[in-house]
Structure formats: C-alpha cells, structure tokens
Amino acid sequence: MPPLRCPNPNASLSLSLSLSLSLSLSLLRLLYWSAPSLPSLLSCVFVTEKSSYRKRREGMGRKEARLGQALQVTIPSYFRCPISLDVMRSPVSLCTGVTYDRASIQRWLDSGNTTCPATMLPLPSTDLVPNLTLQRLIRLWSSAYASCSPSSAVGEAPVAGEILRDLRFSASGGDPVPPLRKLAEFLSSDEEDEFDKNNLVNAGGCASVVVSVLHGDAVSEAKEAAITVLIVILTLDSIEESNKKITISELTSDVRRSVSALTRVLRGGSSLESRVDAARVLDSIIAAADAECKFRISEEELVQELVRLIGPSDEKATAMDQRAIEAGLACMVGLSASRRIMPLMARAGAVAAVTRVLGAESAAATVEKALRVMEAASGCAEGRASICEDGAAAAMAVVRRMVKAGKAGAEAAVAVLWRVCHRFRDRRAVEAVAAAEGVVTKLLLLMQSGCSPAARQMAADLLKIFRVSSKSCITGYDTKTTHIMPF
Image 1 (spheres, rainbow, N blue to C red):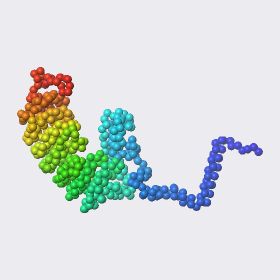
Image 2 (image 1 turned 180 degrees about the vertical axis):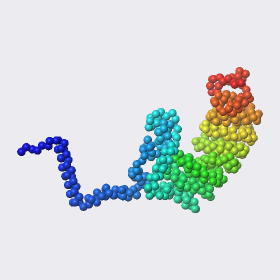
Image 3 (image 1 turned 60 degrees about the horizontal axis):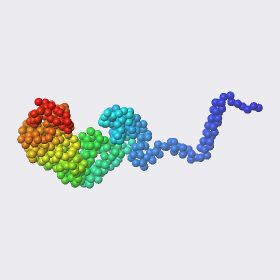
Image 4 (image 1 turned 120 degrees about the vertical axis):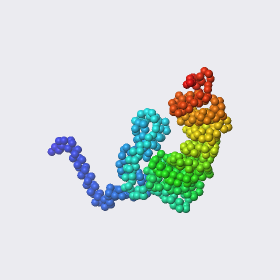
C-alpha cells in the first residue's frame, strides 16, 4: 500500500503544529494534576503580581518607590527632556524653540557646544528662557498622579516634612541649627525633586518658620543658618518666582525686625560668607521696599556696616572679597534711590569706600554699581564735599573708569563730573579733572557711542570747560585716530 501523501506542504506544516500543541497541552494537564503546588505557584506569579510588587516596594527607598510608580503610568513624551529622557524639573527653551531640562542643557553648553542638541542648528544666543507653561503642566500632571498614592496624603515629601517638623519643634525651645542646615541641604540638592522643594516653601510654610527663627531670640549661629536657607530660596532657579515672593513677603511683614537681625549678622557674623549672605537678603528686602520704607530702615548702623563690608579693595582681594563688594554695592544702589539717605551714606564714608573700589581691578558690573553710588552721592552737598576733598581723588577715579563700565556706568560718571565741575563749579574738581589724561577723548567717545540726550548735553558742557589745543583736534583714546571737536 503506497504511503499517504499530503497534497499541500502547508497542510503538513499545520498538522505538525496541531500535534505539537496537543502534546504540549497534555503535558501541562499532567503537570497540573500531578503537582498540586503548581496552580498556587502560577497564581502567585500571574494573579498576585501587583500585591507582591507593593510589598517589595515598602522596603525600597524614596527614589526606588518613585521609579516603581513611574513604571505603572504613561509619561507624556513632551514632558521628557530630549537629552536625559527624564521628566523635566526646570524646563527651559533655547532660541531654536526646543525645550530641555535646565541641568541637562547647561551641561551641554558648559562643555563648549554651540549647537542645539535636537536640531544641531548653530545657536546665535545661549540664553535659556523658562518654559513656565510646560512647567505648570508637568506640575499638574505630577500632582494628579501623586494624589493616587498614599504617600502623598501629607502633601509634602517625607524627608522635607520630617525636617520641617523638627524645625517647628525647635521653635518651642529646641536647637534650630541642625534642622535649618538639613533644610538648606535639601533645597540646594540637585537630587531632590523640584516639586517637593516648591511645595515645601508654598504649602509647607517653610518661609514663615525660617523667618520666625531670624526674628526670634535665637543665638547668632541659628540666625546665620536661617539666612543660609533664605539665600537658597531667593537665588535658586528651581524655586518658582511666586514662592520667592512669598519669602520676601514674610521678611517685609515686619521689616524693621528683619533689617535689625540682618544688621546684627553684618556686624558680628562668624564669617565673611555669612555677612555676604546677610547683605544679599537685605538687597532683596530693599528691592521690594518703596522710597519711604527704604528711608525708615536705613539706620546709621546699617549704612556703616555696608561701608565696612565693601572695605578696601586691592590687587590682593580674593574672590570672596569681590562678592562682599558686589553685595554691599547692590544694597547701596538700592538705598540711594531715596535722596534723604545719601547724606547719611556720605557721612558714613561711602564715597571713600567706593573710590577704593574704582581704584582697584573689578568687574565691569561692579564698577557700574560703584559709579551709580557716586552719582547719587554727587546729588547732595555732603557727597560733593567728599568727592572733591583730598585733591578730588574721587573725581579722578571716576575719570579713570569712565569708559570701562558700560553705557550706564559711563553716563553715571558724566553726571558726577557735570555736577561737581559744571553745575557747582568746585575749583578743586575742575583743576584735577582738567589735568587728567584723556578726559576730553573719553567725553567725545561717549558722545559718539549713542548715549542718552541728557548725557550728551552734559558731556558737551564739560567739553566747553576742558579746552584742548588750538588745532581743535585730539589724539584718539587708545588709538591713533583723530576726532574733530564738535565746536
């Protein structure tokens, strides 16, 4: 009898597969009935997977728990950074329109790259613009997801909540320094979630508790630790502007107590770092105050401490000294908005301190602030007397730095010279400035640089005083070019 043949090879393959499947099912049934523990094993693997995962997650740390939760949800793709592929904490946009997480794109730019990582287009500008809309969407999405988790019922991160509870407990008689230091470390850490930080400042009432320590009768070390926390909140990019305003509002709720506490740290701080931080917090308070409030808080002791913070600046000044100068000048610029404060600042020696800053090698931004303080000082009699004393050393310092402080600094310098040399005609200042090298050239350069009409007119008035040679031309500043006198 001839062997049976399948007319279709595909049918033979189907038959083989059917036989294999039947055999596999038979083996499974045999194993199922012969091994009673197998059904429980299968149910443990496939049925109770979720409950066992939750039990394992209880022993995991905070980071691992969040990773486990993230596996159960779908993260919108536009919430992820194109570089790290993680959910963005601080989304910022480049000029190409692509949004990245701030930490990732900053590392890219700091590495010397000048292109957009996503489009590879050259970057005409590396400015990072916060994408507030996307940040709010990420926050809403995160809050909606976190509300499903039992750990979010408290409304704050476990670590942050524990620190804040310790801080509140210390306010009733304990030592606030350890929890304040932990809080500063938590807020400044790149490993902690941005949402937890902002929620701690906003809903957690962190700013109120820290300011209460600053206002209280705590020891100087506790006040310095509170100032450190305030600086972290006010300067970090990861803290939202609304939360920074909450902190400033807490400080200005009793502005006299805040300024008094900061002045004590300025006077007797344990380190220059703490004094600089106190001045930076003070600068935030001054920026939020009106002219009348600035006058009320500018006590003589405060002004003297700011002058002392600037101190002598020379070639041996360290980077920390430069930070102190910058912080002190920023406070002086803010206070000088009130004209009634300048006589007090002049009597405290502000002009002499600013003259030392102008005589040293400082950054252009620092020189600009120094010239703005000098401009404010020239608006009062006490300030002009200080500028013109000692052979008009301050006026000479203004001339030397006039073209090295940017447009705003140059215009402030011209205003100083115009007041002491043209409007009030102080002989000492006129003689000293006329003898200075290149003063006319610098005035002409300012007029040609597109300055404001007021600065141009003041420069023209000064040029009439400081006459040049009969040829009506002078050698260009730092060049061999020739400039024609405008009259």
